[in-house]
Length: 299
Image (cartoon, rainbow, N blue to C red; front, top):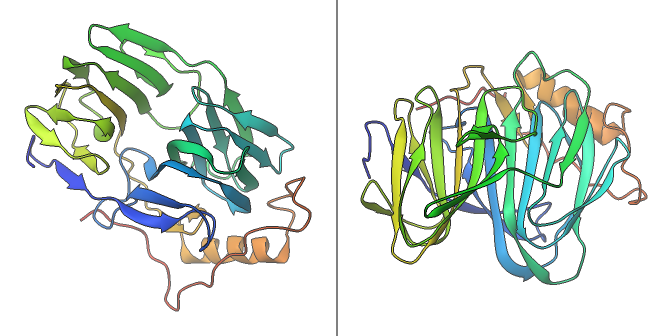
């Protein structure tokens, strides 16, 4: 599909969340040809499925996690002492800074789970700062003609989310009734659009459910249309020009940084703290590959 010069479709792939026997998620970022869209560096789509989420304590460095459920309740606990129940319509934003650990466990066995988990790469100016956590129980929502937009991050249609990020970003959940709507875009942003459910055509071209449709900077609007209605997510941001070394749950700038973070997690170093309520349960770090980790590059 070539809606604009440089647009492309990023396919999804199935991966286990939290271990080999855990629930499966569909991941579109990072992609081997495109590691980031703005500072968005990780997009997981889980469900809809009647299953249990049991992601035991695990570490993060150099990123923010953004968790947005469409259905189901998820309990978040972290090494900062937060213990929060996340419900549909609410947003969790955790900033790892130099290091944090957390767990995510669904409230009920075999409940309907559906949602997104996104990562944001922190710029060098923020990646070694303190860890923080914010729970947003109420986010701005706008209805205009055929479109309902809930702003998770950034600004859209004149309304701004209270979720704080360290790079210019936008994330919006869109509910499109049968009909046509024009989405305003920032020309300096690159964007990605995902069809979660329903049917949609973008600039007259049908889009499949699941993959990310990537749009390079330059466009100021995007026409979407649906005969039956559609559930979409729009992500965007200024292109992220810092080199990233991404491995497992860590984002750094060099192989040695990743090795150090892994060793500290495995040794129980105070860098990541302790998540209460799990005793000694935690996810062990996988073995490092037998080669030096290199920064991810755009192709």
